Length: 92
Image 1 (tube, rainbow, N blue to C red):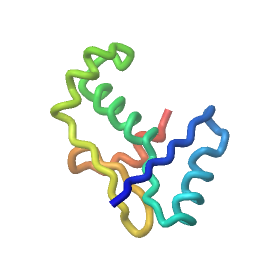
Image 2: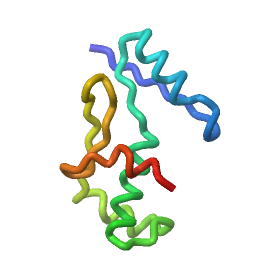
Image 3: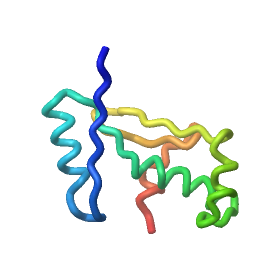
Image 4: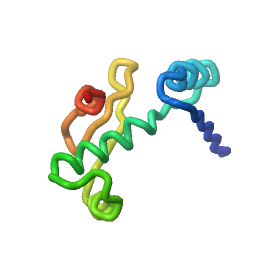
């Protein structure tokens, strides 16, 4: 089985997610919002009271944190442990 990964990079608000979702759907691929994964790690660090700009502190949390992407009703949802944080990671 061949595994194909396509990464789309660019500035915030440039339409990366919209284009990526459309391309994934057209090609029959799974769309993975890596930005959501990063924000979930950041949310976890904030909840632990860590300085999110301290890479060493955040890195130490990675072995214990459980982040999952689930597709529910055709929509990608992000879970931190058993909690759906899909909305929480989109707040300022």
